[in-house]
Each structure stands twice: as structure tokens, then as C-alpha cells.
Image (cartoon, rainbow, N blue to C red; front, side, top):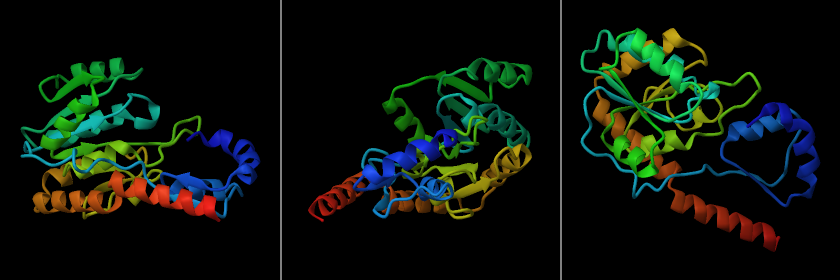
Length: 245
């Protein structure tokens, strides 16, 4: 969502709409802060097929980051924080799936650190490859931030998929992410741009005493909040009620 384009365009559009759907409460609150509202607004996350995204045996201390390597994903922050946390956790490994303008700098960062054995870049991959990797990964890392042009996340589908796969999430208090990740129960959150805090959160995740229990909790949250079959049924019901009303 590009906040810089919101007020004028959305304010003109709202009176013409019978209803509004948002993937997160954050986006509706963001509009409301600019005095843009709709009385028939509903939060329905993008959701995930929890029947296809399921946990498998987890590789200890395995981490995964997925997404376009662009500013709002802050991949360089993720890499530096991971490498710092990994110093005290032998065997930790980060797989990075995604392409974009920050891929070359990311490769250069890892090479300069001599950490090619700790980080693997896969580039862009099909969704089935991501799904298979999530199933066996223990930790999902995503340091989302607000870009300089105001671009933000909504509620990242990748985090919903990771939770359905039983991954513990280490992310930021950004956009709708806190609506998905319950701090201390299914993952860890830090403020945007807090690189040292992100490294500490990753290290804490590596040493968490009940990682399997947290993984089960993450899966349960995904089933309860992000099952796309249930969400599509809710979407259809609201559309029918709106049209009938």
C-alpha cells in the first residue's frame, strides 16, 4: 500500500462502493487516520490453503526468507541480523528465496562476511518450491519496513503460509503483521529498522525452550484465522448480504 496516494483517490472512490474488503485492520485504520472510511468495511486476510501448507520434520536452526528483494522487505537487515545471531549458534542456516534489485548487494554482503556456507540464495522460485521449503524450515524471517515512498505491507501472505507450515516467525511490528504473529506465543516481533533487536530476536528464537509447542500454536492460529476456504465462504456471505441489503 502506497500511503502517499491514499487520501484523494480513496476518498473519491468510497462513496461509490457498496462495501470494502481489507486484508488487515491496519490498512483500514490507516485510511481512517486520513478521514477515509466506509460503513460496510470488513477485514478478510488473503489466507492460505492450510491443507497444502503443512509442517514436516524440521531441520534444526533452519531459517527461510521469501519475497522480492526490495526496500520494504529490508533483506540486507535480515542478512546482517541473521549472521550476527548465527555466530553463537553453529549450524544455523538461512535460505533466501526471491529476486530483485537488492539481490546483488545481498550476495556481496554474504561474500564479504565469508558466510557462503551459512546463506543460500535461490533466486525466484515456483510456489511449490516455497511450500516444500517452508514445511522443513524451523524459522521464518521477514524484516518488513515502510519504504521511503510510503509503501507498506498489508498482511504478508508469506507469513500466513509460514505459520500454516509450523514455522516460528521473527518479524517486525509493521502493518498487519502483529495481527498474525502473537509475540512470545508464535513468534517474535521488533520495531522497524531495529537491526540489533532483530538479531537478538533471532538468537532468542534459536534458544527458545518449547519450539515444537510454539510451532503447533502457529499452525493452530493459521487454521483458525487464515484458512482460505473459510475466508472465501465469509467473503461470499458478506457480498450476498450486501447485495441483498
